[in-house]
Image (cartoon, rainbow, N blue to C red):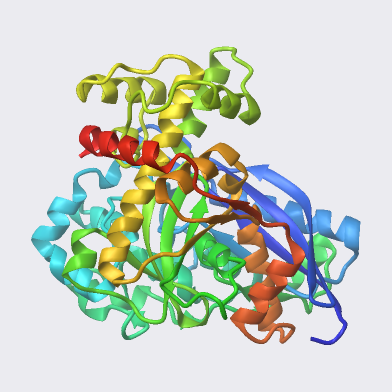
Length: 499
């Protein structure tokens, strides 16, 4: 690649915080500069759990102003990625027909049973290849139908959260491939919306917008917004992989000449843990349905064959409760406390519904242990250790299942995202899986976002080239299995108490 210096701006918006990160691409090396960070969490309103969508938009505007203050009025591209499944509905005047619900909102509780009465579980999976969870977009939409909501009668446009934010910035309505695949309304074989499923559920196909590939220049920043924030009016708005996991997997620092697809796995570690392999085609069969795996879209029309596991959400909620009790607990203290206690005292299944959104996470953990005839953990160290060990064993359980489906042995795991900085959980995971692990970069999502923008404007040509930039730009830490026999025995105990 010729010597260039380009700046691209990524908005990486997760379920707990958002970041504006500048990527400077200079002669095959990428440097990052986080210029703005803001909190993002659900809002409780009565019995509902909602997103402040216009608050998020305001924070994007603030991030653009921060960019101009530091770097001036020119940027080569702006890209947004967010979490999956959540959406907005617009009426014929392009106004919201209702609030944007959080995926942890209670409106979908028990709704899968009613949805399966309308369309069978097998038919939904055969059409979409997507893992069943109550929080899926399909289930959220079906809850509106089931409850006779008036919203759908006046809705004319369905947009996922990043698609809507892109629409606000440049005025183009479309659905980016990776985020559309999270809806459980997309057919990965036809690479388009599943007309059959949409209509069988009682929805209208006209709601759904044209699918565009990851790495598409959507248009120019609206003139009034450009004027307000101080950017040039010809600024490109680019759709990277708009699903944050899609962007993160893009930035996995794998040598694609050394490992074939299906032989290396990734773990995008954050509030959620997303564990899977990158494939050329979806796997939609009885085994993938039985083990509840999902076929989400990746860049260059790849498939992210993965499973969603409740990740650091559990320890994040415990940390909040300890802070509310007046205990000053930073992550270093939590990890060192866990490191110092006896291993394999008790276990939880991180994906048990009990941990979905309890009023008190510590009580939920203790209750789970009581109900499974284990002695409940009490101290910060004991509780943290239970969570970290149980996550590592859950990862093994998922990868074992995945290998049965793909008929391929995973030789190495790449851990990316914020959780990749947790050295204790990384080592536990290496011990549990008994394979080498490479961790980093922490900001994989923003990196994937930025480099797909670079690809969209012709600065990078292929995915392997993009991943080589990651390898040469960021430090990667290696972990190797330790005390494997003891961890094998621990896994047997884990299965006993969590099956």
